[in-house]
Length: 247
Image (tube, rainbow, N blue to C red; front, side, top):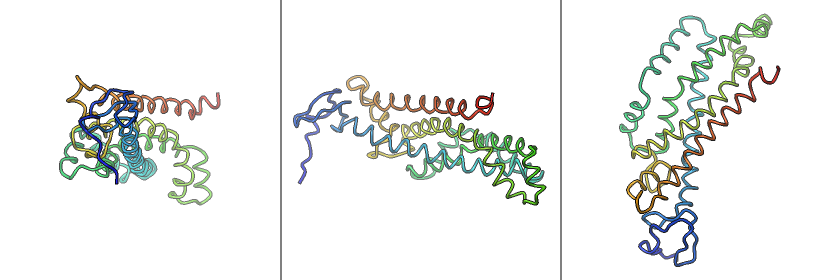
């Protein structure tokens, strides 16, 4: 049977320190003697997973609303655009805090809240792209062959409108990870002892003087990932831009 390690002897060990059992801690330990590197790696699965699923949900909602709004006739288009404008007018951070306080905080709730509050910009982007594609000759040719409007939208317009959506997803991933970290930092996201980068930073804010590595490690990881997502979005935009592919 495994024995509990001595918390007093292993707490707040500095980076690259070795404990009494000979275990090396690359990023040190926290107040409970837990290895910061292990928690950082495990928390990456939570933070990146929550951010990715939230972005996929917002992309799915925004793509559906934007595609219908861009190709439907005026009453439906006006209603969907009005709904998008109303959702855009709501302050997202305040809405996030409100929804997170109404229900018990969890990873599933964070995914749902971020997905439901992040689809509006995607819908606007897709709506403009669909309206532009709807005037192209290949769409008129497909309609002339007797294809229904729904099939034209699904088979011909949406696949050609995915390029800006992919770029928006890459850029939105960093924003979703940052928002998840903010909610977890405030205690409204993923709850301890399950590690996420947000609650790891929160757990280390009281020890910035004597053990700064507890909060610095997840903070640096968060910055690196967000910057990487931004650079990935810029690279995808350059790679998928038709003007660059066909000069």
